[in-house]
Length: 552
Image 1 (spheres, rainbow, N blue to C red):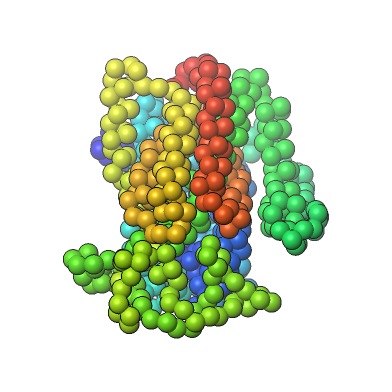
Image 2 (cartoon, rainbow, N blue to C red; image 1 turned 135 degrees about the vertical axis):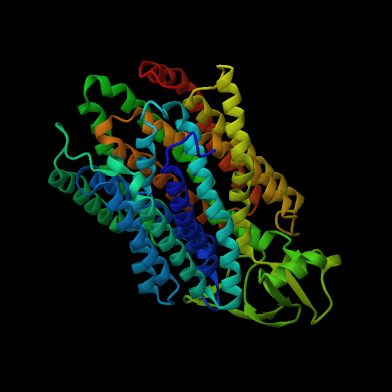
């Protein structure tokens, strides 16, 4: 597989694998940690989802400036190393149980990702711009994407074991170790990068950096502050008078306005030959926002589904193996002092403090009566964060099949264009949501736990959509971007991801407001179907732009 690709690919593959090991280990336990009544911050579902959404939004917003700095000043190699070290330090600190330290460590990860994420993707694309590898660009990004998901798959097993053995802090520290390994691997491949890792410098017609600070970054901060303090109508459902659900969401949406304006200005100020490619990319950026809004529910609403609505009990051989690998939590079926949750699994607080009650552990609330254990007996359950490995597990299984499928179509000259792949990816992703609608009905709207196979099926379908869309998105940015702003446009891809991520947090924070959880998933289905129809409407024009550039 490696022989027909650039020699740098294995190093970039492994660097990204270890970086994603750290990131997804952290994401897999993040909301569980925030909601933990005993060792976390006892946040409600809405509070945890809002913070999660803001965090993953900002993680993908900073690549805008990180890509710009790499393009003009630092080059890709220095930017990737600096970003990786910052992220590793942030992960090491995030488990220190202090709210201020939590925000400081999150900030390090957010800034670090801005330097790392767009530039390793751009560096990979630089190798595939050579005529020797140009036709293998989509395949190269698929292989690269597989590395991402190997890291995302294995990390949750480490996270679960370390959390059970030691606690949250040690689990977060493992994420930091993974990130540092990624930086070391990247540095070992330096001899293969050559001039591909060099900065492009300031090009004729580029906006000076001081103008970007004055007219984009500074306005973003000012707009964000305005969004934070600007208030809407107060009500029982909105006691803080937030316009879009929370102060952080308001601040984020307002802060995005100058950045979105900047990307729009790239189109209007571009050379004639660059206008249509930039316009095509901006159209794709707009559409995929809705994909990320639903896809990123894996760390919030779907993580919650795996925790509270899924039958996680282990018995027999599976229990023995999980216990030996330290992947099983032990629950005792007896009445004790526990946090109070209502019938819809909403934690109850008074004056900001969790209300306690005397009851059985929450896990047994919706276990079928016939499956309830005897009094004082022990039950073994797989750790809730392991559900986060289902999606990357599917990616590892399905990536070779998808690559082979498109290779076969290419050999017969029937391979669809990249925009067409993205359109079908959106359609397939929409169909995955119907699996969760069925799961809600099977579980009597949460009254009974359902099999984990519902999550497996949901992730299986959406993974096919993801493989049609996400690596293709990285590829099309690399193909269509004018050379002097490649990393900047890659930052635009991550900006659309960022906005989608924040929208995902907004969606997840609404989970508790839906009495019938099927309606929550129907909303997600509607959003994806709207994006699908919009993308298919754009495909003809996007294909024409691709053809004009002599690319597929």
